[in-house]
Image 1 (cartoon, protein in one colour):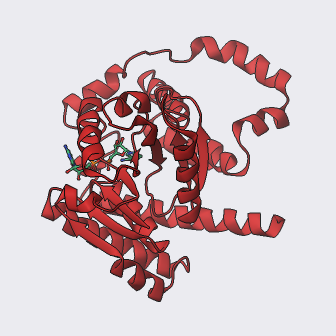
Image 2 (image 1 turned 180 degrees about the vertical axis):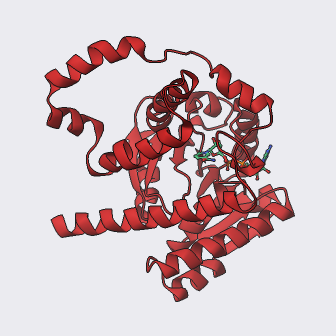
Image 3 (image 1 turned 90 degrees about the horizontal axis):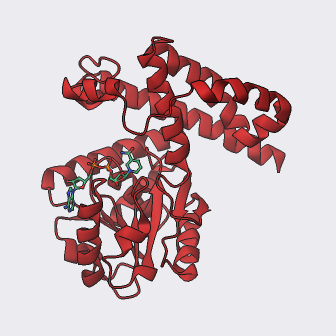
Length: 314
Ligand SMILES: NC(=O)c1ccc[n+]([C@@H]2O[C@H](COP(=O)([O-])OP(=O)(O)OC[C@H]3O[C@@H](n4cnc5c(N)ncnc54)[C@H](O)[C@@H]3O)[C@@H](O)[C@H]2O)c1
C-alpha cells in the first residue's frame, strides 16, 4: 500500500517515518528541497533514538528508509497513493484549496486525510470532488513517539472511509479513536485548549509563574493522567467532592472567548516560541533542541513503562 504524506514541517516527517517503519511505501512531498533534506535528517535522528530505546531494530530502520521517497512534485507524490495525509499549515482557506487540488490529482478511491488540529472536516471536504473520502486524521507531536490518533468524521465522510482509516492506523501501530461529530478542536484540542486557557489565565492573574505551572502540571496532573483519565479520577475521588469543588471553582475560571492579552503581547514582541529563542520561557543557544531531546527521552520512558504495565496486566 502506498501513502503520500504532504508537507514536511513539524508533523509530516514523523508521520512518513511511522508509515514506512510499518512496511508501507511512502512518498513525502514538500515544495522546498531544504525542508525535504531537513525531514530526512529528522527521520534518521528519530530512528537512532528508537533503536537506542529498543523500539526499532537497525535492520528495520534501514529497510524503512528504502521504502521512503522524497519529492517536490505533488502530482508525483499522490499518483497511485491509496491514502494521502495532508500536513500543511492550519488555515481553512489554504486547506480547502489544497484538498480541491488533491481530489483532482489523487486516485478517485484515495482517502484524503487532514491532520488539522481542529478545523471543520466538513468545511475542508466541501471543496473536494468526493467529500465522502475526506476524513480527519490528527496526530500528536512528535508522531514517531505518540500512539493515539484522532479520526474525525465530517458531515459527509462515509463509514467506509472511517473504517479504512481506523484500519490503517492500527496497521501502523497507532491507537485510533473515533470522533463522530465534527466539532472545533475535536477531542484533544478541546481538552488541551481548556487547560491552556486556564494556564495562561493563572499566569496573567499572577497566581503562579509559567515555570511553576509547567512543573505542577508535569509532576502532578499529567503524571496522574497517564495512570487514570479524568472520568476515572472523578469516580475515584467521588462525584460529590467534584461537584463541591466545581461549584466554587467554575465561576472563577477563565471564560475568555479570544486569546489572552498576555499571549497577544508576547507574540507582538517576537516571543513566538522556542524556535524564536523566546516564548513564555527564554531559550539560549541549543536550548530548543535540548528541550526536544528531553521531551523525546521522557516520552520514550513513559511509553515503555505504560506498554510494559499494560502487557503485564493482560
Ligand atoms: N505542530 C504540531 O504540534 C501539530 C500537532 C498536530 C497537528 N498539527 C497540524 O498539522 C498541520 C501541519 O502542522 P505543522 O506544525 O507540521 O506545520 P509546519 O508549518 O511546520 O509545516 C507545514 C508545511 O507545509 C508546507 N506548506 C505551506 N503552505 C503550503 C501549501 N500551500 N501547499 C503545500 N505545502 C505547503 C510548508 O512549507 C511546511 O513544510 C497543521 O494543520 C497543524 O494544525 C500540528
